[in-house]
Image 1 (cartoon, helix red, strand yellow):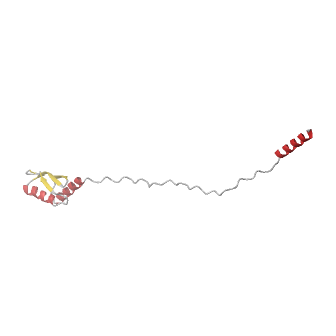
Image 2 (spheres, helix red, strand yellow):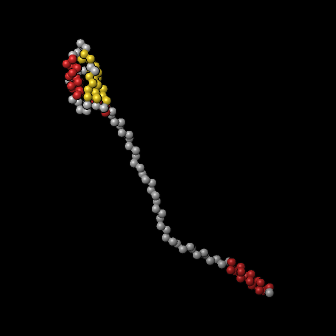
Length: 121
């Protein structure tokens, strides 16, 4: 019986001591994971210059038209196409002429003539 136990122990040890290399795991083809490329946002543009006030533009055009007609010392202001003229002129004819010139400027819908006639101005 001892021989049988010794033989079983030898076989058990012999079975444990086999130096077989483990079989490699089967290789499955790897498909690359699609890379998510972050969306590149265009660089922020420099802020546009603020648009000019249309009332100031209209008043400026009227002022230029008056100066081109040699009428100086008259200050126009504008609001939604309505132009008001302030200042002084030496004669009533120049006062009326200034209003007529202002009326002809593009964008002017009406003229409020507040120009005062002052002799010697």
